[in-house]
Image 1 (cartoon, rainbow, N blue to C red):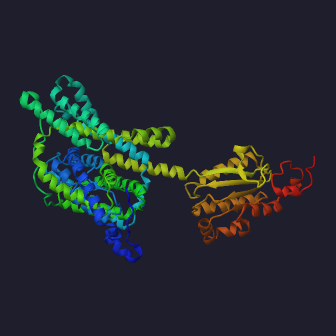
Image 2 (image 1 turned 45 degrees about the vertical axis):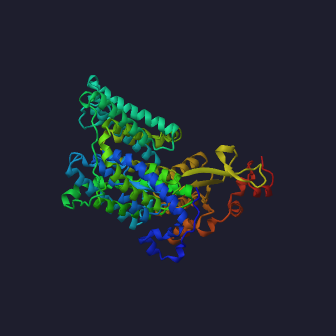
Image 3 (image 1 turned 120 degrees about the vertical axis):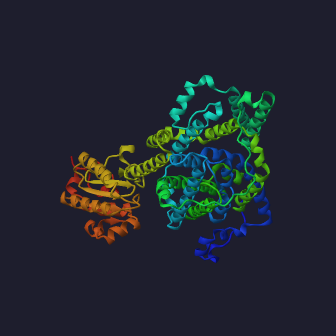
Amino acid sequence: MSTTAPVASESRIPPWLTRLLPFLLWWERVTPSSLKADFLAGLTGAIVVLPQGVAFAAIAGMPLQYGLYAGMVPAIIAAFFGSSWHLVSGPTTAASLVLLSTLSAFAPPETPQYVQLALTLTFMVGVIELAMGFAKLGTLVNFISHQVVLGFTAGAAVLIAANQIKNFVGLPIPRGHFTDIFGYLFTHLGQINGYVTLVATVTVVSGIIGKKYFPRIPYMITSMLTGSLLSVGLNYFLGQDVTGIQTVGALPQTLPPLSHPDFSLKTIEQLAPGAVAVTLFALTEAVSIGRALAVRAGQHIDGNQEFIGQGLSNLAGSFFSGYVATGSFNRSGLNFEAGARTPIAAAFAGLLLMGIMVLVAPLAAYLPNAAMAGVLFLVAWGLIDFEHMRKVAKTNRSGTIAMVVTFLACLFLKLEDAIFLGVILSLVLYLNQTSHAKVVRRVPHPEQDKRRFVNVTEHAVPECPQLRIVRIDGSLFFGAVENVRNALTQFEEANPQQKHVAIVADGINFIDVAGAEFLTELARERRKDGGDLYLLRVKEGVCTPLRNGGFLDEIRPENIFKSKTEAIEEIFRRLDKQVCATCPVRIFKECEELPPPQA
């Protein structure tokens, strides 16, 4: 698929205008050829979202038509006010499940009160997303680690399947914790409805076969049709009284009706924690999907603008009967593969869904709950990314712990609490990594012509008895100082005669006051012991705060060197020549000027 087309020059459009009307940046990409490609991609997306929207609404505890409403107006608004060319917004599995977890504590699902709360939560999520976008907080989602997202989605998948077991086997399992659901199932195995289970199983099997052997046909539609036809046949020949197969019922043949959130202070206070949790995960989902597709399309994603687009889409959705919408991985990927060239494809998908719903809404009367359960089992299975989970388990111990903890938190805590826990775990992992700067001893290799610096431990090269050369890779801030101090202390205890210390600093990208004070303290200690501290290849971003804070005066400007050659020449002149006279190591070129070592 070609993604090359004329792009509007940003220099000709004032930045404030592109902030308000971001579609001006890609409008010149729209051509008759692109419109045709976008229309076909949008039509494909509208067909696919039909079964998905119904399934996601079932997960969210909303009347089924609301899953379709959420894929209409929000998709159009997000397309024109986001930054991605291919991202498609609408209802998603994770957002639907978090919505259910948040709202079911305040009202029974599918009731008018529950719907009102969902609209209010959607409005609040839109406000938070919009505020974060204008505050340029788009980079915050980068701190939610991939391992946490893997654990959350896997946990969500288990919960989705658990909540649909009642429809899969035809048992009146009360809504509750997943352990209660399985407990009820195992104590009522003899009451399982075989006809219902047959329809659900055939739905799953047909979906698997369709996905594997007929990838061009949306497998959800295939599985729904197969399950529905089997259900109609069983009810016709045996009678619904015998089979006990219940159907969803016809959906309203209407466009999204106008709606209004509840702006009472009590409701807002109740929903605030859930709104923050939903926002964090929704934005992570949208921005990560947008960036993944942007890499393939050769596009740059503006995270802040994506926040604004998602915020506006949810604000609009709350007034057009839509619940929380965010970027959909399946529909966005399909949109890209179907040949979409501009965001107009996502807008077409929203518009065409309106027309399709009017035509097919009555057919939902033939859709059995068992087939819906089968489709949701397929959705749940597809959510679990086994490949990446295996990779994390094999390569990253701390990431594995975070993934497993988040997974278990989804099962045993409320989902919004699991999200907060995941965010905290992500931050802990980030801080743990950044606080452990890599500190290694370096020496020039005596057997190489250019005396390239190598690690002491890797090459077993002897060190100078008076000079310790250390390389630090990582930020030198308050969280990392203690780790660096401990490493240098260990080196000191191993070779206390090395009075001079040279730090290769080109791996230090950031330093704060605590790091600067640590260097000045180290310099004073070295001079007190008869040596000194030297800094090599200091980046300007590190040198500037040292200079502005007066720390450079204490370290001494003459101890800052641009190259290792310059540094070794100067430091060598300051070494104790009596020690050099008996030193057998002679690893520096300057050592060749000395007489042979004395016995």
